[in-house]
Image (cartoon, rainbow, N blue to C red; front, side):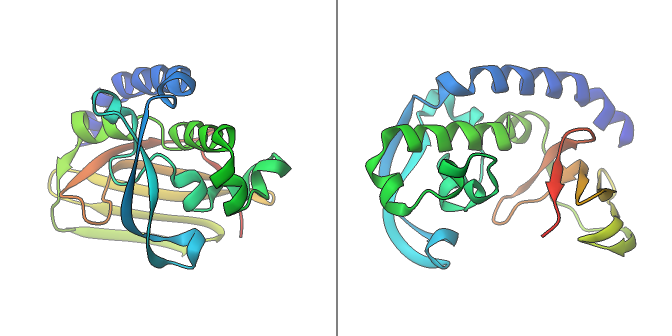
Length: 195
């Protein structure tokens, strides 16, 4: 299982590089449609609102389990280094095509190549055989290793002052999705702020 993960690593990184470079262009090609969704920004209420998705022929660039405007509606913009992006309101978002575009690009960068990783390198869901954990998530060094028959997932937080390296390698499951997606977040990528 580790050999298979390593075998996928180079192609996955090349695809991610391609997706990082092309995200500002890809983010231009969206279809906006009304859909009912539970939205974090709106206090996790079920609402009907227009959501952005990439056109069908570019869909693998998008996160397979979210719309490409999730950077705003999932409130990930509140972690931005840019004040204007961090403090954007729903009214700002609704009235600015530029802000919507920037949020799409940031989401495509944040979850880079998820559609490719899911469609090309995923594995079926399977029951956990063994779990190993040390530390407390969000409080210093922590890791969780889940071993499956044909795959594994290792998550870890490695302290770095007020921030930490977030490690997530192996195959990870997402809600309501029938397969586990290939994951390769390793240091120095994935630096996160403690909350």
